[in-house]
Length: 151
Ligand SMILES: Nc1ncnc2c1ncn2[C@@H]1O[C@H](COP(=O)(O)OP(=O)(O)O)[C@@H](O)[C@H]1O
Ligand SMILES: [Mg+2]
Image 1 (tube, helix red, strand yellow):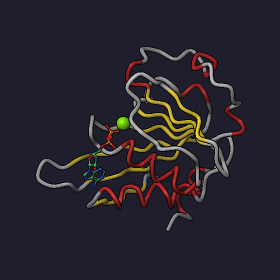
Image 2: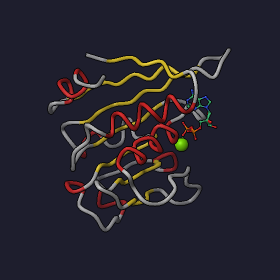
Image 3: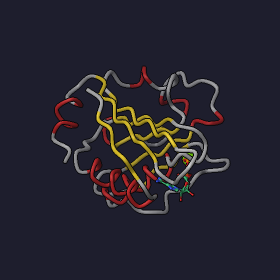
C-alpha cells in the first residue's frame, strides 16, 4: 500500500529521507521520480544524513553516480542523462550493490531490473506553494512491512 506524506518545506523533505534511512539495509534500491526541482536530491540528502555518510550530496552536472562512504554506504545516481542502463556494471562503480544503499534519481523505467525489490519515491510539487507530496510505493521484498513501521 502506498503511503503519502506532506512536506511543507525542504527540511520536511530531508527529514522524511532521514527517517526512511533508519529502515534501510545493504542492497536496498530507492528509485526517485518527480519533475526537475521537485526535491529528489533534497530527499537523498536526508537519506545521506540518516545514514551518516561522508561528502556533500549534490546534483551532479557531469557525474552520473557518486559513492558516499558511511555507516551504510550510499550510492547516489542521477540518471537524467542516461538513456538506458543495462545493469549496474554500466556505472562502473567500485562497489557491490549488495553492500550499499542505491538511490537513483530519474531511475523509473531504467533500473527496475537491478533488484526485484525496490522502494519508489514519487515527489509532486504544488503550483501555489513550496509544499510537496511525497508518495512511498513499496515493490516486493518486505518494503510493505517496513513502510507500515515508518512513523
Ligand atoms: N517542500 C520542499 N521539498 C523539497 N524541496 C523544496 C521544498 N520547498 C522548496 N524546495 C526547494 O526546491 C528545490 C529542490 O531541488 P532538488 O532537490 O535539487 O530537486 P530535484 O533533484 O528533484 O531536481 C531546492 O532548491 C529546495 O530548497
Ligand atoms: Mg536532483
